[in-house]
Image (cartoon, rainbow, N blue to C red; front, side, top):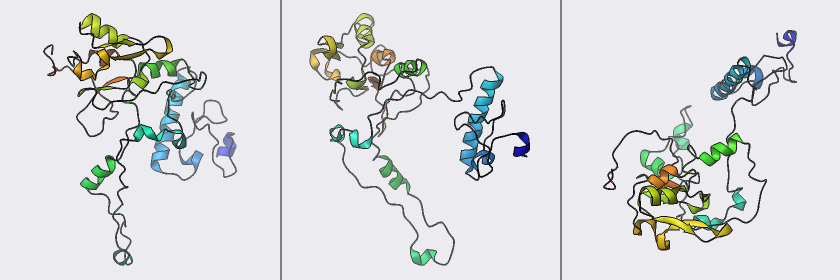
Length: 265
């Protein structure tokens, strides 16, 4: 059938497609699933079908067929390139082993040999996560603009600042100065809107940084925990601290509520 239709096939007789758009050699024809990959899992087939559906929608809408736009990502590098001192405060704990049936119990049947983790074991294993991801990954304006304009992270390289991150800086706000782009939004809203001036610019030129007044921990300044600085920060430099063992990142939803942390509400 495929040969008669003029589709280009590989040596195994499967339809050759573009891995991203699922396009075939015939104009307007897309393929996904076992006919393109051969026998595979249902999850792989569903994922390929989704990519094909997105590409077909772009095609019939007269748009360039690009499938899913890949967002801009900035990483710390390969495992061997990461500075181990970034995790000097992390307590090393061994991986939780998977409970299994004993050889004696499994030798006379075909039961599943892996018994699964208990709730306590799963929780303990989850707590080993270093939470390397950015807390603002779903809302970062810098990431959105970098994706829109096709920014390349390796185009301009040079000296990078490396600021230490204090875990006791504020009970409700996480401040990560290494992600700050010195836009000044937090400084202005704290000073001009709230009239507090808990944050300000320190230094000049390339060494300029935004820090709490008198270089104190943020909670020791006049900060009223209003969260306005978080709302205007375009990156993950200022994020809300959640009362969970791991901070996320989580995909959140904005709802109306009353803040109990200050007199403003």
